[in-house]
Length: 418
Image: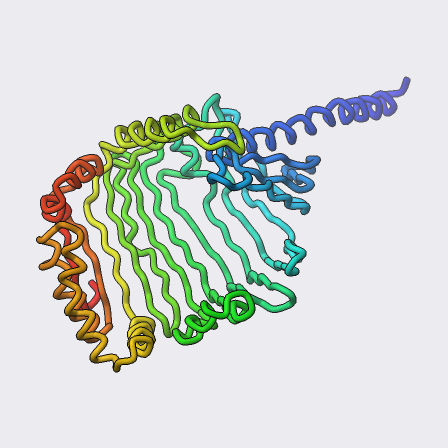
């Protein structure tokens, strides 16, 4: 036999032998993805998988919730079927048996999701960058934290009976990992989230609930637009997590900003939480017994004893909603707004007294009264004298008066944002 024929046969034989190995590697990839995501509560059932170089494509996926008890009296949630190809590009295998994909893309979605009334959804430009699949026999929290680096979509539109009820222009989320994504010695994470051009149309409420529709119209909430943004940083060594901003800003309505500063929320604590959840899991469709729920609560409190609150702020800046609420309630009471506000202010001490915490009156009544007179902003601040364990604060709740000083509770009205 000639050398040319021998080389040709060798090439064909090599290609044949490589095909099963390639297919097996592609299947191993999606199997590992499913195993990892089960750790955080998702059941993923992928369709047929194909491999082309370093690109793996799966023909759809069914997404269910793992170990998620149904609410009492309710049927368990039905799995969601995504009957569309999902492409993982730039896939590489890591030494520990994990994987990294440069990008994950999903074709634009344009489909019905309900029949009565007809529901339709469109979503475009769906991309996930830096898709990390940890290896190893177990999936530690430090791996779960790094599952993806960036996620973005273009416009979303949800309609009912041909009328748009919810839209947004874009979603962008991105995280930076130090020293790098996929590191077993992760030091820190920082990230941002932006949901831009949100729009909600509540006029359909007129047919479904005329009473609620009348309230919505009186408050000017038939069409709501706005944005959501978040900034986050997180150090792994001491579990110091700072949410500098979690802002829900709605045009001509108001803005709600939540800030949180915690310490002790380390990957080790998250590992304990995941282990507890797995230990306390109940079969799908069942609800935990009262004893199981109490045991989980006690174990959870023990785990969280190392997590401390440094500070927390919730601030509301009014852009018309508070004033419209006062006008609406005054009209219902048959008085003008000034008279209604004075009446409300006079009842505040009695309302606060029902809490059984006399010290709360001095903390709450003056700023809330000022806000009612001139609704600009209202802010609740928690700033313990030193970082205080969540478990200690829970114990302090037995002495509500002491809890106020333990929390460093402060309520302010109409003060500039810091």
